[in-house]
Structures are given as structure tokens and as C-alpha cells.
Image (tube, helix red, strand yellow):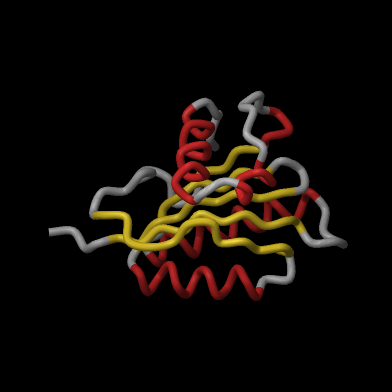
Length: 135
């Protein structure tokens, strides 16, 4: 039987002094580390804000959250939803799916995810991801 998974949905801002090329490095590093640690998920970037949903074992997600909070490339880190999410993965095929909202017409306003309750934020994020061209 598969273990109970933990999820994390958060938003953060690309820190001052970092440009769009840094986002490519973040995605590359995340894909490598997530594959090693059994984490799956999706990262969305709108040119200023990140929204990311990840899932994996509780230990792996806790370590990832600590790294994200300490990563100088992220500012205004806000954990919207975190906790057990069952045994089935929401995004099982992506060690780190990525979408750039500069080129998407999803209507997802990342900054506003922090203004609604966690279940609504997760639903808004999940619905938007269904319309995106995930790389």
C-alpha cells in the first residue's frame, strides 16, 4: 500500500536582483531534486510570482519547504495549504511540471491565492493547471 502523502501549495515572489533566467535554473534544480526525493508537482510563474503545488512523503515535503523558505531567490513565501493529501498523487507524471503565465491565458492570479481559504486556493490552482501547456 502506498504511503500517505503530504502536499504543499505555496506562493512566493522572485526576489529582487534575480531575472527570468534564474527561473530556468530553479526549474532544472527542482526537477533533479524532486526526482531523487520522490516529489511530484507543478510550478507556475507569472513573471513576478510563483505558485507551486508539490506532493510526496511528509519528510520530503518538510525538507523542501525548509529549503524554499531559506532560498534567497524566493521572497514573500506563503504556505497556503500543507498537510496530508491521501495516497493518490494529484500530479503523478510531473517531477516538476512548469508553466509560464506570460504565455498562458488561464486567468490565474497567483497573488490572489493568498486571499482565499486553502481549499478554494487549491481548487483555483488545480483548475488553472488543467488549461495550461505544462512543460
